[in-house]
Image (cartoon, rainbow, N blue to C red; front, side, top):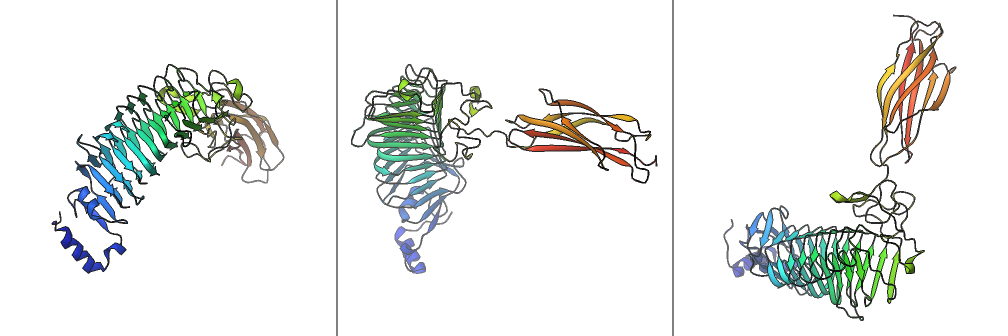
Length: 504
């Protein structure tokens, strides 16, 4: 570890060496250059980078009035910031707005507002991080307040945090919090918004390609909650290309929109959520606005509550269990089992034959896994685009013969082939056939190849045991099998039988 010197001395040395330190971004290492992360933050200036080596750091950090990058060298599993239960672990305050925090586990915080992270009047980015095991009155994991537009969360896991009141995972008030490619799981709120709460004046949380699962609210909105707002600037929650599953609350197990709240659920799957009323989705009569588009609401404990007499209410191209409300009939909505692949084990992709396939509308250019949309003849409802058949079938030959035909007595000979056509996952067989030709072009036949439900086939066809006397190589018959799946990808298997010129 390098020897620490006074801040005055260090600054004098750096200025002498570089002329004007403020004009050049610097990189500092913890614990190489500074024993603590906070001391490195305090020393740094906007544009600088603080790199943190692996270890557990028992600190409560504050980044104020500067746009620096705070980054671990080895990722969140190896680099832990532990608040030791003494307060908020990471506070990011005031402008300038572009601080970046990358690659940490933020844990064991205990704050009034924001146990793990507290942001006010700043627009930082937190990415590739884990925010877990924190407690607060509001915003157990993350609390964004008063002009935090935008606090961006990218590729983060926010899990097992607790809020006494609202926002077990994330709380946004007078703020904007976009969440990208993240997991909001197993958080708890004694009040509302087990996973996410966008509340109050201009409070907003947007989840894109995010899993919101296993969260619990003692009040409303197990997965997402919005309400307590102002019509002048209503709070909002948004789930787009996201999975909202296995959450629970008294009302709105998946999503709840209350007084002057706005909820937008697009390209998402809302399933297996639990509540006494509005298992998947609950909008109150005093909700300001909501929209459900290209979404599946299925397998929840109780029917969704989708009132129509609001300032704005829209439900279109969605699969609604329990029937489509009369006000939204004729908008491309259906009510049919979406045929999830394996919901018991958390797989909410669509199976072949799902009525949600090709029944949706264009909202996003890719699904929750990054698969481009559409894959088939149309867009699919829900968070997942059905990939269909992406691979070529294979033809497995288990027996073929004879490959050598003797004597050349001009009699007919049976050619027999046994085998199986193996289809990749999500593929169905469109057609199967065979052709038989000889090298002289005088013999040719073709027909359908019969295949059973397991893909097995047994084919017997005939050839003539003859050859051209002047052909010293003999006569070659080529039997070709062809299998094509519904995506139009085909595989062939050529097989050869020889009538030799002689027995040599």
